[in-house]
Length: 348
Image 1 (cartoon, one colour):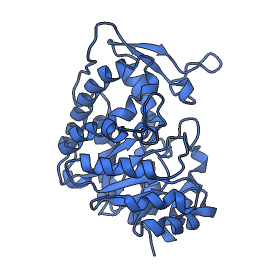
Image 2 (cartoon, one colour; image 1 turned 90 degrees about the vertical axis):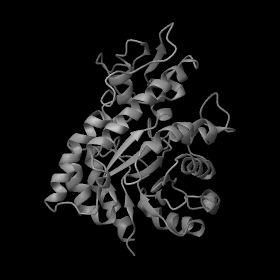
Image 3 (tube, one colour; image 1 turned 180 degrees about the horizontal axis):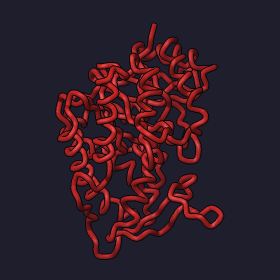
């Protein structure tokens, strides 16, 4: 029986056309939505926000840059210990962003890639049912506590960034037809928080800390636009950044996202580790998706793939599959193998 597939976001090609032709051409019949591969700086996920958006903001100071290599600047950190660090300047209570709708760059990139998507779909090179997927880091994940030496700076920045992200979202909705569009929130810090893995934060209250952003943002998305969430164990410095004992935190956070969204949620993507024991997957029985399609990020180490799927189905009979995360940090030379893994998963 063929499996439904999902692509999380980043794929290390140089152009959106390459993403659509390669992964869309081979997998399109199994997909509901397709991203543009988060080409260019977006392949490095939140690091793009840090060096393109925050590093030049007049109300912020850069406390630390990623370490240069052989005297050459590096915009993208090698691991969390090499990340950009920022400080809000004295006297600033709320960092604000200008050029609403365009400042963060997500709307501009989405509009540009959408027309490539539409041209290929109209030419019959992509299946007609496919929607264009725009994946964006959540507010909490774009601005994680680890990039602020002074914890008091976190909310000073997150409030204004949420305003900017809301304007970006509304611009995307204005420029791309609703029945062609799907929005995905990417959530890594939230996932870590759900397991007590964010230094300085207790696991207690994690859902309440992380859902207000979606109570504000997700209701802005019209019902005709699809909405999904990607929960992530993180890939900076190698995947996974942390390896929990089971999926309980992921399930708790996913349920919280669905409840907070104020509208229909169309899918939830939950990564799974290279394990096939009942204890790891058992929390899936507590998922309350309220109609959302579940995609398990199980496409990795294909020797153990079928065993992982069989164990997961004991607790969640119906789900699609995906990679554990975006592929932006995968060496491009490995993409043919990654694509073959997806084809195998679709046919297994």
